[in-house]
Length: 360
Image (cartoon, rainbow, N blue to C red; front, side, top):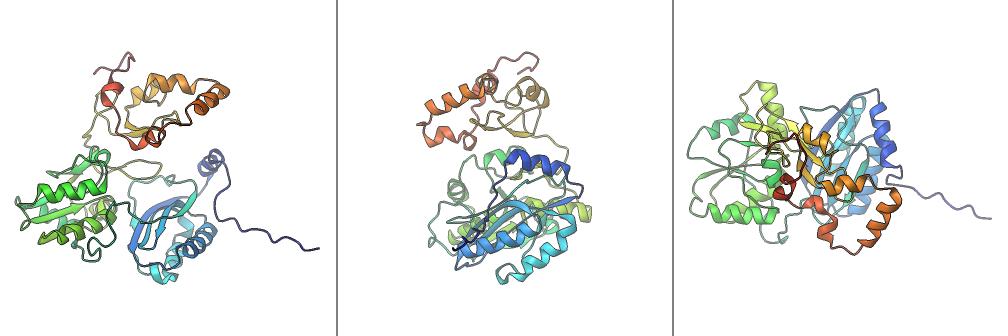
């Protein structure tokens, strides 16, 4: 009788609550790192599976996107496996000598599971693949060079991140387009600066990947002097600390892991979305059926139990059976309603919440 060959499992099967508990019990430190590279991957599925096997052996966590155009990753690596991790990346021809951006404000708890997904693109830009040459990018500037360029009052600096990122931290005098998608942003930047194509333009983003596409797009549109912050704000913060530079970036750098922010300076540029007082800590609504991303101060977090509204507070206190029936009844909601965390917070409604003690 033939014995059935055990199927290889290349994804996580453990409940996230257990994983988070195990992470808190770890006795060793972890290093939070991000990296990306535009490189042609012929067999993305095979590449994804091999990478999962190798990283899983090193007890690495994180979120990685693999596409034919390359790789984009944010990760948490055990400190004792750091050298092995770098050797592993170097063993892949596609990833050899790839720049790594290490977080400067890190408790090692940025991720609790390893997820590697095959995507159409490593950056959801909404642009046609053949619309422009993505390899014809702008000049890469170090932190020192970027700071020096900012001293020129004729220089234009543009934040290539989303509105919720620039809300809590940004470079002084930066143009921060009030948009929700990358495509809207690059098109708005081109239109806003259409009469300034001969000016020196500085672009920055979180880790550099969005600026790779944006700088190529601007050059395609006729901009003559396009520059980008090498390694994004993550690498900028590291270089500022390493070289004792004056940080021109103020506030927090939004990051896409459990921390939701890495402090660069003590400046608080934003406000609690519920009471209006100075605050810059993002959170996701404690009602997982809502999960709205918004800014909440400590006082409001306590009073609202981490929720964005009284409706969500009421919902999390319902018995599990009743929550299930409500979810079932609303199963035909639109995708936009289901994934509320992708939407902008309705600040008017959030601030109309009646919770005594927080003044508007």
